[in-house]
Image (cartoon, rainbow, N blue to C red; front, side, top):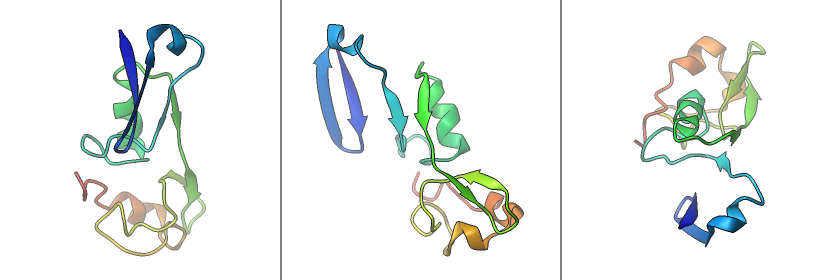
Length: 100
């Protein structure tokens, strides 16, 4: 049996025995199922049994840490601008399901 590591559209296969030499860490996510790099992604990533998720933490205008991949919200939400220019309340109202 083989396992596959998915990185966007790139598949890498390796024998099951080799998989016991290292851990698989989720990065960005599977945007077809959950928005990438936010709390939705983290919940989705752990559900199939992954043990580790790599995240990016940025700070909102009011100093609250928030999990989001990009410094700008343009690509992953229904809004534009930088996360550091939004308050936490404004950031939590963004539509991260834009691409799903």
